Length: 108
Image 1 (tube, rainbow, N blue to C red):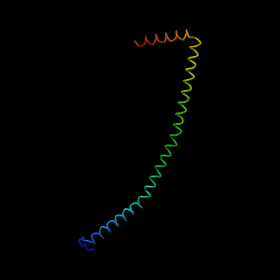
Image 2: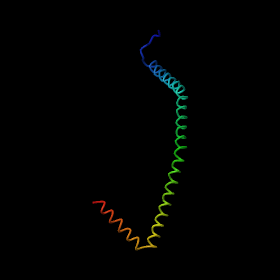
Image 3: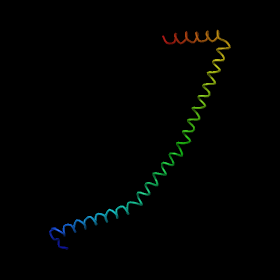
Image 4: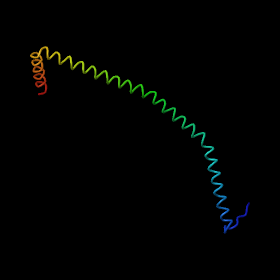
């Protein structure tokens, strides 16, 4: 068993320096042991992000394409409706009135 002297003067400074050195050494050892595990975790995180991106990008492109098709279809239908109203304005007014009348009767 080692004998411990009371810390006074220069031996207290030496003890503090020795403790700091041991703490640094312990920290370096812990970092060396943890580094491979941390690197594996970082690698797995990057792989997961890549998988999400590979799935999300095509999905976003598909949604964007569907929105564009829907907008184009809506514009075509609107134009077809407008053409029909311009070609037969009186019939359009009659159909609108009939639909309004039926909707009013159903809402009662």
